[in-house]
Length: 582
Image 1 (cartoon, rainbow, N blue to C red):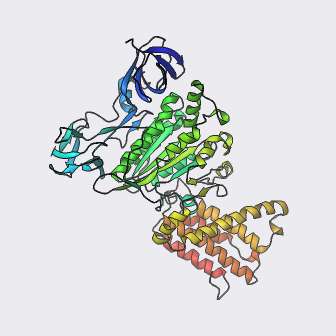
Image 2 (image 1 turned 120 degrees about the vertical axis):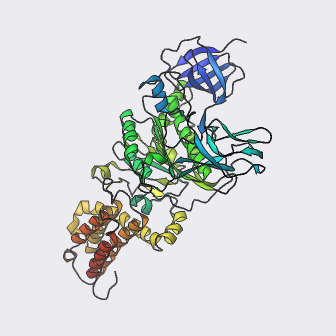
Image 3 (image 1 turned 60 degrees about the horizontal axis):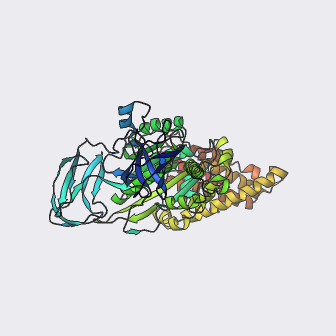
């Protein structure tokens, strides 16, 4: 049988024939340099291959060699702290081989094949093990327990297992039928990992950002779209979440972003300190880096590589946050590949299957019970940035995301220009998880949390209407109670919703602090409202000093916060007429 060879080249797409017996999404080595590619279409004996590397210099007639396997990622100890490219190759080891500019056809295993890990078994020989069972533990990072799992499809009686120092390729034990068990295994990235059952999304993913936790919460295991134009702070929000959100593991996927921006992310993540552990954030982070000048095919694969690693740690029983920045660049890669395949274009040139592909990716988020014993519960929460051209939320990628996500954090350029951070537009954003997470906040933080949230949303909604009226007739023409509402909304924006990402006391806000600030802002409104009803003119209320003290309270250390809050509460009580409770 003749060897398959390159018959046609169109950018990152290559046609090879005759290619018999190949399967869809099988990996192939293309050309004399062995460029890695993936079969995405088969027609008769012709296979269309999307190549993950630059095809410049590839010639017709060069050989194409199938590998017999799909695109997989090696899962095991050593992923935390890794910096990988879009198909799971470690950039540091690639740089050691070829220098700062990556060579073509160069490969390196995802996990270090030479590093030895101290393994401690938690099962004994003679017992039965099955898919998902925990065989033992490895200390992957200081105080981080990596649980070694039985791979999918493997089951039987354990014949031997022993403690010791092993590489990821060495057998730590064997089944009676001779099947070796290792620290690592491979998994196809386009296939979601199995689990025992889905759990209700009734626990919040606490972010440390007041506007998000209080007004637009996301459930642990939920999905979020973060659309925003250039300069609205998408990357800053995701970096803040990576540092402060209540996640055990963070997977950050830089999908098609500018090279200088990703270089900044690499630099900043190594400097960021995890406030809970006191160590670098990189100790619990995996970075998948695929910049805009890298081949589009690898960009398309990068989001699957990221979410597969997230599911792996979810199966160990950890809470994982996946930050994708941004899905718009991923969709552009789909559009380019679809055009080269000569498929029928959909809206704005995107492929007609864009919505389906997005939905399948978002569906890999969730809170689950893992397979195997002991029982473990984990979650994958997906936060994806979207970069609509010109900030137009009606474009296809944003709209396709809104059909499937549970929360929208819409970023507004006008708020960003006013130095409001996070620049979340509370008039456009929403959360479908509020009813599910409300009972948790009521039980764990304060019983009146849901009530305060509803009241604050109503005030902000009324504020928008009044600002439009005031723009026509002027503030002085409004009634006193309307002028009070505008002032209260200003207090809410400045003291509750806004945060200073560079202040150590305000960069992250515990839910207790968020509740106290919101409670004080609304008590101020009630006290001033009672004073108005008692006949006090609005001009004599003098709310500015209390507003300034509330804004300063944001920046107060946790040790001084209760006393300062008590002082402000006393000042608010003094506003109300004698005998009235604000």
